[in-house]
Length: 204
Image (cartoon, rainbow, N blue to C red; front, side):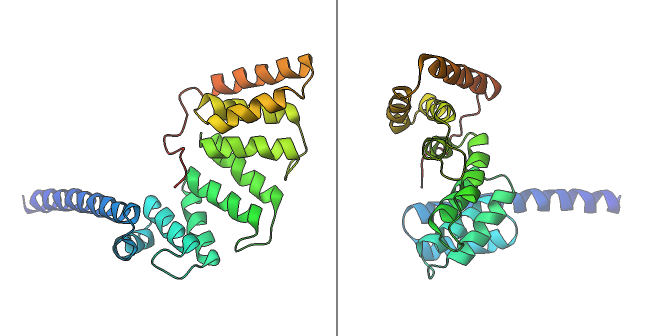
């Protein structure tokens, strides 16, 4: 009987702890959004140490921008990397941006394109548009206007208006056969990723 009581108490404790953690994270993220970076740091940093993915990303953002802490690209890379390793698409995108600009690491277009591609595969819209630019300009990948068209079209389909304009610019540079091939790629991609558009598509 005592064993059953201990098990029930443990279950209630774990459930209440999870609720408290969730509430704390929400408070920390709200503080970050409102510019109260001291409070955001006090809440999110311990949660990041415990492995909370959203808290990891928040801490990375704070280091990357110098919000509430000294700007530190190395620590930003660390926390973005940890969050990305847990499947956080915006963290993957931020890693790509840092590699593209040489922030905290040597500038590396190929590495940037690789992280953009990972984030795009999760449906992160800015990364889909970024892949369009990579293929349009040959940044980190071999220049390929059909691929550029596809990525811009996918991002446009998911609501990126600037990608829509870029898609049309690229379309003007394609032959009718290439354009049709690009449209076929778009259809195939959207069919295989139906319903995947990432709700966190806007940049923070």
